[in-house]
Amino acid sequence: MPVTQPVPRLTLQVDVEKWPLKAPFRITGYTFVEINVVVASISSGGCTGRGEAAGVYYRNENADSMVAQIEAARAGIEAGIDREALRRLMPAGGARNAVDCALWDLESRLTGVPAWKIAGLKPPVPLVTTFTLGAEDPEQMARTAVSYTGAQAIKIKLTGTPIDADRVRAVRAARPEAWLGVDANQGFTRASLADLMPTLLDARVGLIEQPFPIGREADLDGLSSPIPIAADESAQDLQDVAGLVGRFDIVNIKLDKSGGLTEGLAMARQAQALGLGVMVGNMTGTALAMAPSALVGQLCRIVDLDGPIFLRNDRSPGAVYENGTFWCAPEVWGGGR
Image 1 (tube, rainbow, N blue to C red):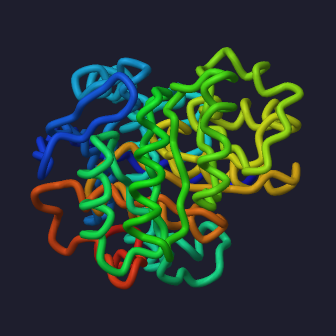
Image 2: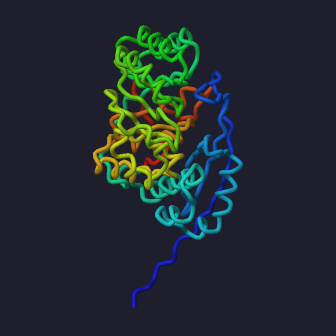
């Protein structure tokens, strides 16, 4: 009779860290001046893996609520959970993301196998990332766009108000060579999008992200947009992906939404199987949050992993931004021994 191997117990530590932003960052309905992230550290066999989450602000997640979720699952985690069991134990969201990414990092350190190989991916390469402009006055956005020296792609936050057209024109004039996308953060209506569309086309905008609010996805029915439309808030986790077909062209995967790298990779592969384009984004964070997201990025046509550029300081070693590309050294996360 085969002998069942005992499941190794794990030791969990949960910390909250405060990371000030360089300047206030504005999107539809929100202004951010700092981020509080939760870091889960899971230890076993003399190794420790870490994962970071900022949470999903529009779902009212914050550091306290994420810590409470993790603490409620502590017994199950420390008993020796694996990533698939974690998906059953905790709901999708920032808390599960921190724990899931810590489990990936721990496995990589215990086995000496880099996370990309565990995930069945090709060796990772630096990724061209968008650099995001908060919704400010057009002149300020143009100045910030110019300051993104070397950026190949820029994403513009819009608010669904008439000033959006001036914002788009100002940024395009400031950066005539860059790829541009716009992100409404649920702020448009069919009428405001129709009014803005000629400006978007004239500015050669390549993406419209989440134009309408969650629950108003049917507003996309019958809308023939010449510019690809991406689902962000409308695509929270794996169960949402199939319902995007016919309304959206691209799904924006964020690990804080999906509840970790395990679900994020599943979402990317499901989207591709359904003929959807794949994008990876972030809810802000340090290099520790960007590194696992970059594995999803290896499967994506659009990458938005610029979170650390808005921080006053990043971790050390931190994310590297050079000539419009993003890279994290293996030492940051998931690099094996």
